[in-house]
Image (cartoon, rainbow, N blue to C red; front, side, top):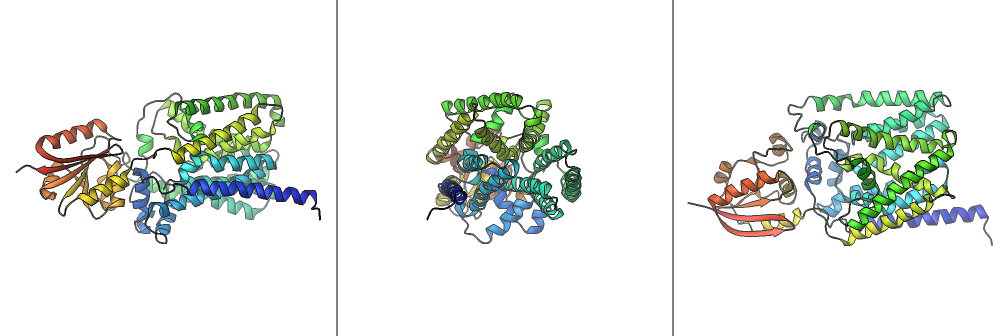
Length: 495
């Protein structure tokens, strides 16, 4: 019996989406537990281990609101204490992002080709795979922002107050996950303002929703502003000066699409493809004219502009610590923007989109079969744990190795060296996480004849080297190891 054409098309569509989802799941589960936790991931783990009350009062003085840490807190209570198991929470959010992007694309364009392409690009994007393996809030942030935007667009079309309540709740969870979710909300708000003549009810609903979210965020804002040491607390990234990089407006969106690579040819090729797509896209917009640009494309561009353009504008006026990962809320919208190119049949854009998909696949393969992308703190801590004798202390010259060590070997007597010229946390935070800050004099009192020194030169390098030199000059070196760039020394105190 022959099936109707529409039924056949639906079955084909479902089959293609199922295949994309299977691929997404496989590439996110492979090598999930390969890499060690690094500094920020260790903070996530240790913060989530705290009581709920300390998560809500921001005891660790994180620059991120508490919703992700709260979810992770309960996740850690139901899964085994392994890197693979704890990271699986981020992986689940990353997998759910695939259908969320498909649904958002459908709400924006009502075009199956764009929606499937966006889902496929997300499935194999090295950036999305990398952060599906990261014990941080970025996949949750993207999932909430995408879902909230999709529900907002749906609410505008249906004129239903119930959908507006859902959209507001999702955006509230998003801003309580990451501050830059406000920028995505700003993009949605600007779009509502620009289209207010066509849909005044949607504009006022968006304005009321935004006002309620701002009021609900005031308690957390007060908590951040009330910190005794703002230069070391939640607002540290904004106060931390950074070396100016004039190429950041180009490299940031490329990273959010293709991830990072140490390969010169791959980096050069993805930069060229992105720049070529951008130039041709602008030419296509000019051909279309303002009146013929789809409303969904305007919304996509406005969110990208707000999430990327506003922080980068501040960065150009006053360079501050702005790692590309903090702009993750823009990543799904960049994917949708790239997927839109498949509709421009008389243009090179479909070919550039297809080539981008191929390069993402190549980058993902390189990520899975290449070297570890994070320092092997787990292996370094395991070496010290296996070889340390009772009574021996472990001194870390940087919290980059110390906080992961608190996760992997909390039973060790260990501390981080005091006096860092660029401290990343107040001493009270280390104490709350079960750690200690030692001076060299403290080391003499806690060590029982012999002690270990772990040097991870990813932070305050010259200072760390000077401190190690001072230790080496006054103590006897018994052993030295290097594990993935992390140097481990065993010293004996001189009588």
